[in-house]
Length: 298
Ligand SMILES: NC(=O)c1ccc[n+]([C@@H]2O[C@H](COP(=O)([O-])OP(=O)(O)OC[C@H]3O[C@@H](n4cnc5c(N)ncnc54)[C@H](O)[C@@H]3O)[C@@H](O)[C@H]2O)c1
Image 1 (tube, rainbow, N blue to C red):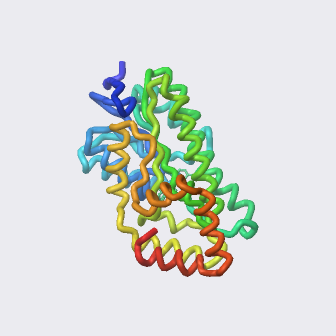
Image 2 (cartoon, rainbow, N blue to C red; image 1 turned 135 degrees about the vertical axis):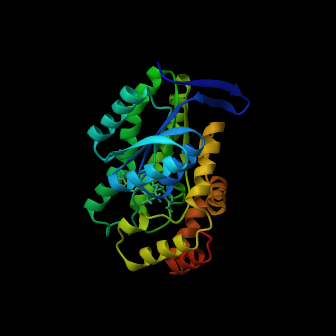
Image 3 (cartoon, rainbow, N blue to C red; image 1 turned 30 degrees about the horizontal axis):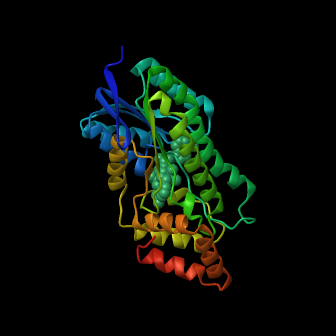
């Protein structure tokens, strides 16, 4: 018998999830950045953490931090681009831990590039991690959560999925797909007591730039400036995600810049993109984006 109990209540804001007793969370890409911050924040609140990452030694480091924070857990090698790895992770948690209350599909990679310049193999690389990795997580865990009577899924997308800035097409497209997947799951999973949150941050400083693939120097300089001047941390975003889980909120858009573009796009999507197109045509888009990144406005 699982040592935890999930209780759901319907409030004016929708379904709310309350878990008492032991709570199990699986976090992909937990060896760094946001995944690690979330693992530690959840451990402090009594969650048991499966820290999964393609980089097992870094997942081990996260596990040590989880233990230092007073939590329990395990570290596991899992390459989210491989369905066999993801299925094995899901089976392990249900067989050995008695279930998964929370799946965080967080593992992701970044890329800049102009469409046509981005090598096809780089498209496959980013789609495999950012899109298929999250689809595999949902595919492996959703049937088990349904059978268990409930659970929660957090998909870490990005504001890139709706801002669609130039020179980031491959990254934008994968994140837009994850926003759409999450919106679909909101209604699909409602009858099964499975909540869903999609996280859409703009830039915050992590290790993601280390493996970022770019097609020109501007893209790297822009990303680096945005990272160095970001005012929000992984820890702060982790707290926002936990609050969203508790309130069963669909969207987490942590930064003001993301919130503003979200609103502007809803008021007039074509105006927003016509403005971006104008900036590109007159040749000032790069200068403006770089300036905004240096001012911490991205
Ligand atoms: N940092 C940002 O500015 C930013 C902004 C918006 C969204 N995000 C998203 O946040 C998520 C976390 O990224 P981060 O910024 O913490 O980056 P990070 O590089 O610090 O952490 C990502 C982790 O994912 C792991 N990973 C990469 N490929 C993997 C694979 N195939 N299988 C399993 N693990 C894999 C890496 O080893 C790493 O530990 C990503 O989905 C990213 O797209 C980041």
